[in-house]
Length: 90
Image 1 (cartoon, rainbow, N blue to C red):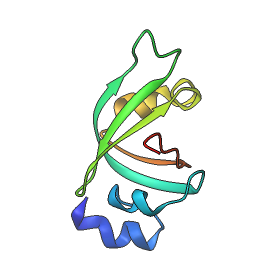
Image 2 (image 1 turned 90 degrees about the horizontal axis):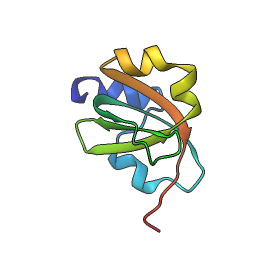
Image 3 (image 1 turned 90 degrees about the vertical axis):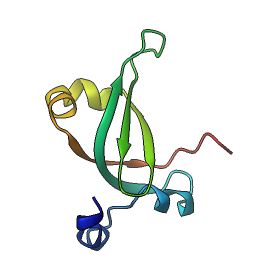
Image 4 (image 1 turned 120 degrees about the horizontal axis):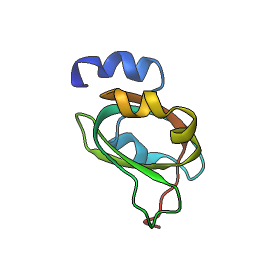
């Protein structure tokens, strides 16, 4: 990811560390290597993706996207994800 960061930033694709400066509900795009996919039975249909870029690890819950794009999510090692910021640490 580090080799492509300049091009990613040029296309408004943020790194994991960039997310801390984003406001809640801000539209964002991120990219990273998928290191884990989890679909716990107690998660009410949510799938949790763990992505990693050169700066940090990110965790992303998604439900409807997984159902719609199951093959893309399960068969690709790197993903570009568009969504809104939701910070549960606040």
